[in-house]
Image 1 (cartoon, rainbow over the protein chains, first blue to last red):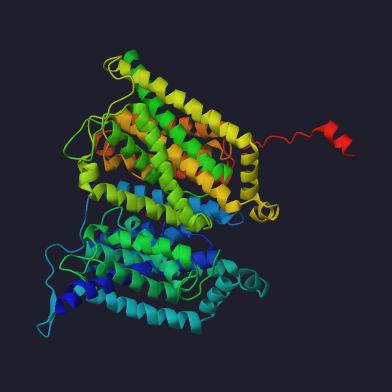
Image 2 (image 1 turned 45 degrees about the vertical axis):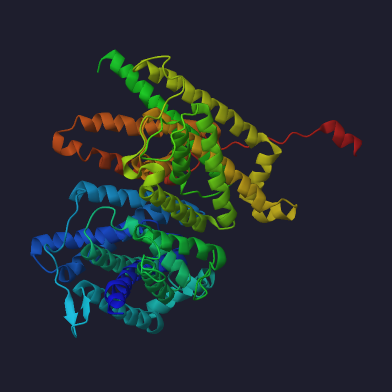
Length: 296
Length: 322
């Protein structure tokens, strides 16, 4: 039982938190700008490398250097939106999807040019696990990830239900035409979307980098589970994406638990495939997701 | 560079450009004719490449088979298995709208990649398959054999081009464009939209399998690295967008010109000092990414835009029917 919690449940929740942080942005962008942002994973990578540079120059702990990564990622997405996405906004959204593939490539090649393609780590050496009551042995990082996602969930709920910008975002996501007619400043909403999506992606990137190591494909490798999470939660429903991320993370980790026999249920090298498979099945049978998201 | 070296550089360039031209024509059937966003080209390419490699290679204990069948059989089998994979994928997700189809097709391509890397008994994992023959092996030796293979590739390009053109002009192609441009109207006049989309997807996937098979025979070696999505899926999309989606000549021109940019930048970056040369491939990726953005904003219809054939009226018939 303790083995299940220590090696499957807690890592699953931590992985889920990383997915959730990315999926919230994907879901918001899909809801408000109406396109699947395939460069979102690479925004995560940018956040991780921005933070890494701050760790190198300032010598801070990665989580304290995080604001630098966030600012870096947010400025990058705002610039990309202005230069590459905005000129295509009046066209069918599929052009923006293709553009986002290109942006993913541009981000990744710039990262490789500036930082190189070798693996980097935030903190050298083996991290000691935290031992609680002699039974729970969990990594500090996983506890931090779970704490961050709880904080983000509370802040996000407050933002979406109590603030003017949050409510405008929900309005545009539910019905863009009506929101425009009612006099909402759509460009301001779009900007807020990128700022929130970019910030959360940067946090996710740093957590993912802490969990393994930092390399240029860090975020791209996570893009599909994050799409799965956004669809599972319902497109345009940030809280749904958060929930979806947790579910996908848990399913991925728990799928290799020896449920039936002594062998893992699914070979761990196919762990990620379970998330893709869930996404494909969802797309076919319940594309509106758990929380009745939009369908485009 | 000496003239002979230049000649063989050109031969190698044209072989790869031909393989990319087939991929571009295949994507043109799916996206240009049918409006289907396939972001998993590398998956179908890989299925075709592995099918043909396993059927034609010499027997080896490290992977399945090695049946030493003729290359042509391998290529036809590649089209069949890739087409069947396409059929299975289309059967599941053809109803999905553009963005969702992109996600589903990438997801399936990634699962295929995982299978290829992990199932050692079938594919020899990341070590790959060696001793894959070429057609007409033994007729010519050494580098001259490349010229023969070049001719073989471009004969196939020509066949694929003629078939695709015929498809475009046929009533089938016309219906497909109707489905692409106005799905509801096509449905209203009684066209089975899903069935047309399924057929398009399968034809495209089969052609992608042929391209995969050709690349396996060209390199005589196949490992998962050859099916890198960046070099297959992404580059082919840029080629088709630049060449002109909906236009078969455009697809071939796009393949040639983008592959020329890719190859020429390699020559330039290889002459840079050593510390830059290691990073040269990133500069090329960056250039291709920027090229795509430029095409999307300024030349959306590509170098050779789509030109639908005019509608021919039978005037006499019109008179008799008053």
